[in-house]
Length: 80
Picture 1 (tube, rainbow, N blue to C red):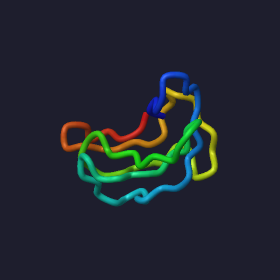
Picture 2 (cartoon, rainbow, N blue to C red):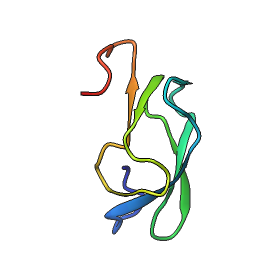
Picture 3 (cartoon, rainbow, N blue to C red):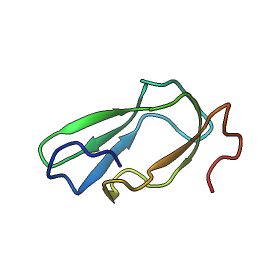
Picture 4 (cartoon, one colour):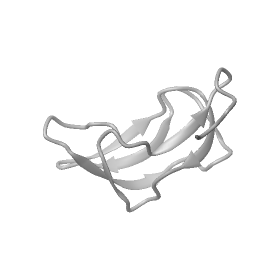
């Protein structure tokens, strides 16, 4: 979970724009997260295939926790 504000310790996943198995491009909106003051679109930080969503819509997730796994060309292993 990315940190959206200085005091943010957790955020709520509003919804996913992609599903496991779909290709994503770096910079493409992957999901929406609600922080303390706003709902923000979160972009993919790398290109590849979304292989797993760790936390579904509605989940409250602590900052720094993994929320999804993207398999890149360089990383063919997928989630641990």
